[in-house]
Image (tube, helix red, strand yellow):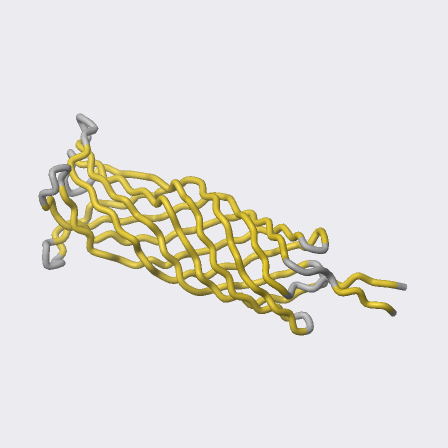
Length: 214
């Protein structure tokens, strides 16, 4: 009798898509960083799509890997400022990336894994006048942080696998200087955020299964 044993070792490339949310809290601070007033929080939610590339190697049932991932995103949200009631604070994440290591356990063609490493997001912040809707100030940044996640993947063909994954991104607090549309300094906001992602992934692995005879 011949049994096909799925091997997770090798380079792979894939696509992913799903959704996420980023919880953001704004505080008005002085130029030197001293706290002035809380401005409130909101959730920036939306969809994301992207790709990943990585390498895995399998030892017995244990699977180890390294992966890089890059995504376009459209996570947006806003709230009326608790400090200045005529301001509406708006946040948007338009890109994100992960560089992570993986440790997993495989039951033949089923792989359960955890992952952790670094994360980066592209943020854009705007302040609008509540009455007129006119943008009165803005800021943008590239923010680095940490990521952890877990996933379940199923090999449905010799080179193909599909899975689901959850990731949490720890992005901390940063001070961001805002400018008017004319480039004039308009104030500083201390913005804290984290991100939760839910993804469906499809991978193509270079190589094939092992064939065991017994």
